[in-house]
Amino acid sequence: MTEQAKTAPPAAAASDKTAKRVDRKKPKHPALAGGKKLKAVPGDWNTRDHADLKASDFADDAQHVFMRHRAGYYRRRADALEKQAAMVEKFGNSADLKKAQRFTKMQAQYAALKKQLEDAGLDVDALISEEE
Image 1 (cartoon, one colour):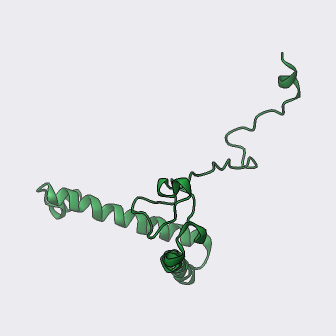
Image 2: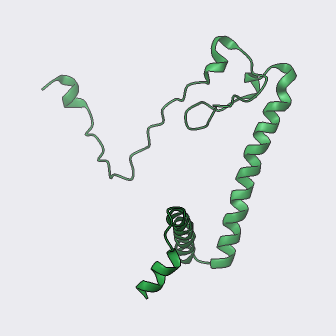
Image 3: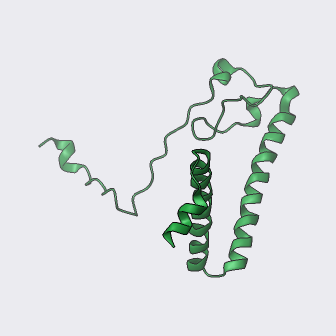
């Protein structure tokens, strides 16, 4: 056994909830390579694959683009919080809220499946009435 293996702490189990998530450092967008400054938000930029954009990533005459980009982010975040607040207000406790969220997700899945079946030429209403 190596010296390092003797002193290394045991690895945390995958199901161990106390284990911290390992964050990988996201690379900057290729448009920023070589210290270039942006005049617009790149069309293929996304938060999953790229590091967050900063004001310093934009040219001096394009700071308004960054501010509008951030404003859009905060607007979407505020809309999501408003929607969540309305759900909590409507359904009260967290158990009922989770059930309601699950129900709305299932409704959306049902609507998508129904549309796919109707596009394929099946009569969904007839299928449902046969089951009853």
